Image (cartoon, one colour):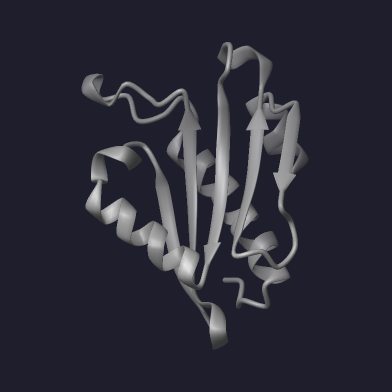
Length: 125
């Protein structure tokens, strides 16, 4: 929402592909967080969701700092898997998970999951 955008200093959003693709991505940037800093939100459906969950489980270090959630979509899509990640990656060795707070990460992921899920006919909760 507008309050979150202002408070987090988000200035640029790009989304691709939006529609009924098996993978969707939204990238958010803000100028005050440093060069190259961005937040990436991704949605995976059906086989893409299964593959991403498998990879995240097999290589858990690759998703340090990520916030994820899954929900059932039913039908051929079966599962939706949503992921919030921040780049450059936080310094996990020093206990820094993210420059974006946990509640903000959850709010961004929830909004993205609701919009993407609605496009795919998934129940939005």
